Length: 233
Image 1 (cartoon, helix red, strand yellow):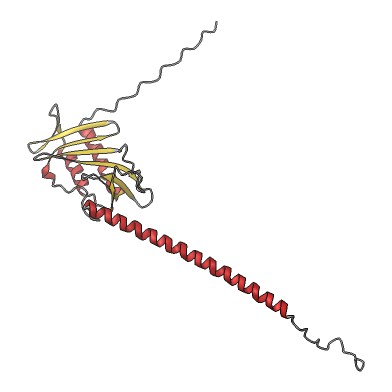
Image 2 (cartoon, rainbow, N blue to C red; image 1 turned 90 degrees about the horizontal axis):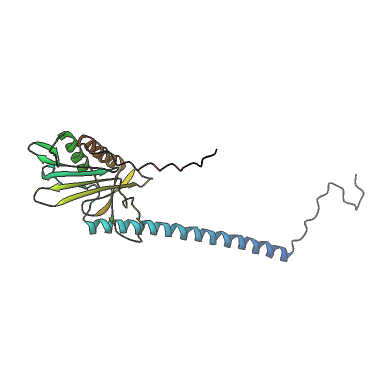
């Protein structure tokens, strides 16, 4: 047993008084941490609000461009009846051919050789199936966020000669690389985003017409001359 007047080793110890200064420091530290957290939260909310505003502004700009261009999402890029077309000129990969409507079919311009009418019909059908996903603005715009479109050197071109005069042109540009879309220059001169598979169908029809229309192969670049080797006797 513990001796009288002497606390045993299991006796509870008296609580030490907390210094007011230590309490104040702890409260100040908590306040500083809370303040930093609030500042970080405010900064994150500001960034989020800015991103939302940018997306909304871009959407408004796109809608404004579409209204100015007279284009409607889902509308036809080439709004022509096949019967209006009396001539088709296509070019791709350094090859070109022009066919003209003759009687109930098509013939190659120049020598009048008959061309499979299904090739011309397939191209006109593919062009008529193009639908606008977005109208981005004139292709000649400088300094815009939508340049370039891959239309400085289009991978394929089509020019449709129309009954009564006039020409409707379509040029195939590059893909967006993200959402399955491709850029084209529509007959109205606007840069339009279309479904990439629809653009690929037009390009395939152009290739078929080039073959069936008898387009000459692209000219081959001359091979570089071999450098003369010095004679070693």
